[in-house]
Image (cartoon, rainbow, N blue to C red):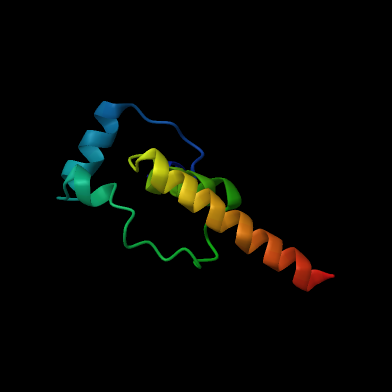
Length: 83
């Protein structure tokens, strides 16, 4: 389990199913990312990008474009403050 938690070990979907059963959880609870604390210092950049991708994956095109526009505005504002 420690190797799985650290991301050092890949597992099969069957093993994942056994882990979920052992934790007495449902897959929807395990993969619910709505309540994650994104300021948690334990997330690496790669993990944060995956979380962001999961959040926007099921959104429609207009919503994704809006998110991109907002992100660009935030980045532009941040870059102006750095100068």
